[in-house]
Amino acid sequence: MNNYKTLTRSTSNRMIAGVCAGLGEYLGIDPTIVRLLTILAFFTGFGGIAIVYLIMAIVVPEQSQATQ
Image (cartoon, rainbow, N blue to C red; front, top):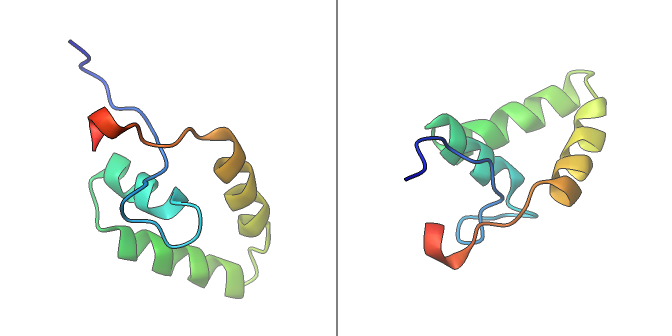
């Protein structure tokens, strides 16, 4: 009876830690777009994105088998 979405790291569509894929699933967009925006932000001067990614990889839980 959950009517809300939870942010989780993807276990099936992951490249490194599943953060971008989980964020894409949460926002309802293609994870490749999230990955491209992350790389673009990293190379255009927003170097803090690497720290944000690492924090999310630690804090955000992995997707359970039931929600796949």
